[in-house]
Length: 389
Ligand SMILES: C[S@@+](CC[C@H](N)C(=O)[O-])C[C@H]1O[C@@H](n2cnc3c(N)ncnc32)[C@H](O)[C@@H]1O
Image 1 (cartoon, rainbow, N blue to C red):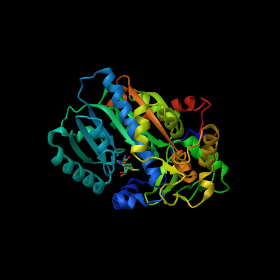
Image 2: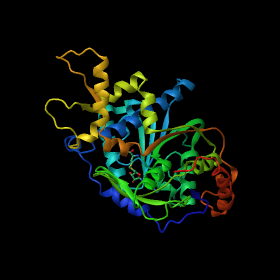
Image 3: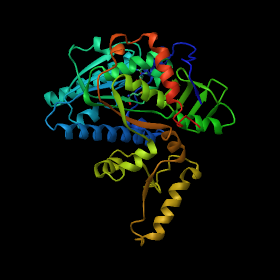
């Protein structure tokens, strides 16, 4: 259960996180394709692409003529720049705490802009701690407004403390138009705690990811500052924080944001298999590993058990299909280890439905809201949806 206390963060981890991402080398296509998590990274990218494309679609259904402005919170090295281009948006603001990453993404954008000219959206790049600084004060245009705010694989950093969560939500909502969306991907604390409780010590994982909690108690977690270390093969090695979703929903409502839907990655994947464009994107992005492997290539995992599900599924298909020996059946899969890493995450979509609560509009980082909001959390914690329960 999540205990209703303000947080037990033992210090400020933002700088550690920034240093980690600043040091991360950009790997080329050749290097990425040799990585053990090549398909997992493509799969995660597919999830983001589908989420972004489908949300832009929804915005255009509301108004097909509108120009679209986007805020990419914790935008990193610009991994989504191409997605914004494909989505034909008009303006983009990227903000991230890691100065080197912001610089790299700006170079990438400028190269693209040279090739594409005015066909490419306009963009602005900001180095900022989105959990501590008010972005509205940094936009070139003081009247900046957004139709879409996206925070991919990063929202969890703000649950280090209550005031950081408030600032992140303020940044997400403050310039978002009513009817606009706040979308993202973040670890699912229910799933993390479920796996933690199954483990014999304070960590769990496999050859591609590892999560270790610093606290020994597997029953009570603070609402903020519930820290664990996340390691993803060659990409991430950082402190992260549990995001207890009912608290996020409650805090988001103070900023005029209402949850439209959240899905586990597994649910989101299955749901979008019936959507034609998303399905074809799956193969275009090489988001799944061909099984059995093609052209004499080795499977991603040397462990046969990693393909047990794929093997069983293929056998069941073989039974129901007449086989053409010249064209043996092939399916797409992820090795079990990569699937286990992918299914830690969830996808969320909030809609801006009204104004921010006046007290938050006036005092973004005030601790004076702590008791009011936490007592609100206590009542929402009784919704039977506690992580790991
Ligand atoms: C896993 S990367 C995701 C990058 C990008 N959103 C993507 O999907 O490719 C996490 C990003 O969050 C950024 N980040 C972490 N804490 C932050 C903070 N407090 N303020 C702004 N950015 C932060 C990191 O610098 C890093 O670029």
